[in-house]
Picture 1 (cartoon, rainbow over the protein chains, first blue to last red):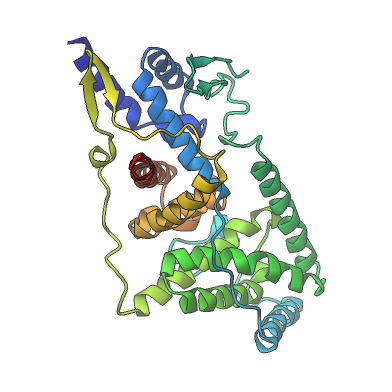
Picture 2 (tube, one colour):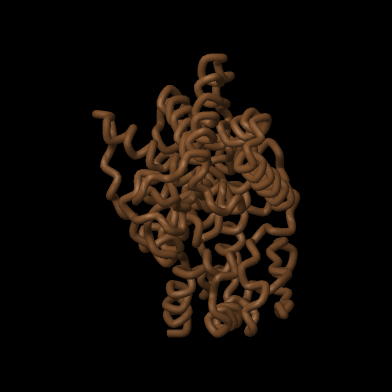
Length: 110
Length: 250
């Protein structure tokens, strides 16, 4: 019966381990989780494997690198920047107010 | 103040040295899991560098264009390579993203937000590219939490999880190199909604809120998808570690 109860609690814990590792859990849930961990070796082992897996993801650098940028592509980018600078000097047309990420609408294309 | 705990599992090197509990006054709550590592420091410097580059570009300093492209092009290439699957597509997405970024650079109000802003553009360029592709796979696939739970066995009246021995990860460099190949495969096989979250949140180290804004979803959706993506990756790595152990035993 005790093993059954432990297993149920483990399942609940299982769903919030990432939030725990990211320190995004509210204090009460966090303390509950830690008191469970103190008495549950399987959960500690699992948590450790998850932590190491995340660590590998964070250290990950892909094996493929982009090809060197061609002169033509480089020129195209510089031209886009210069054009943006020139347009910025011009008075903005009505209804074309600037916007950053936070103020964009959800249908925005960038 | 963060509470300190030490749950040491004798001899297994399984230790939790610091509690991950959010402090009751809320301060310091968002520190990441590996914020004190070298990678964390590199990441912080990376962000400082790109913010400075964004400031210089907004100030009209065209010498910053080259550095900005050098810094972001590789990042976008890596993201789109794992999102789109094809090298050529990733090259195109990286160039198109850089182009759109410069065309609309004046719209960036806060240089501190340059990374999520560029990645939002990249995400949209990737989406457009994938919509045009006849090979685009189904992206709405969900992963259930149950299928990610490890099996349990009862031995000597005690519950035991059927998981690999992770004690040499990531200290063993050979093992780490092998796992890198497996990790890449694991990320590639994730359904797109999970793949984008794990790449942005863990590989690019963007915050939950930033990823939510990039992907047009809520913070809770990011947390749910991130957890499932991490569990799926962990599961695949775990299987690889168990196979490796069997191979050594043979």
